[in-house]
Length: 97
Image 1: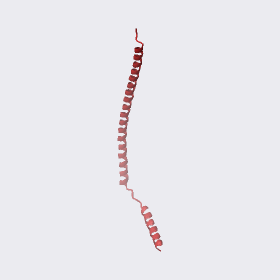
Image 2: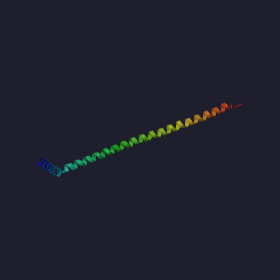
Image 3: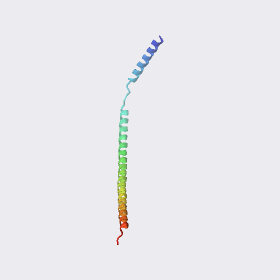
Image 4: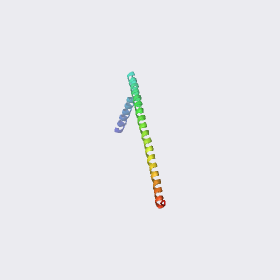
């Protein structure tokens, strides 16, 4: 008997929850206007973020260019120094008479 009563109570509770979830929420014109204003603010923020990201990307590109030039110059100097050292060793081994 107790199990039967518990089942009935459980069934009633589930029915009440289902009916509570089916109630319509009114959507007013104020809500629509608020959503439109929110979308406009989001679009404005996205535009500002795009400008900021473009600026940062330009700075990163400038740094990459500087590193390429810097490493290029350093590698060139190292190759020149290696060539000079080889030349100096060869001339030291066979001096000019």
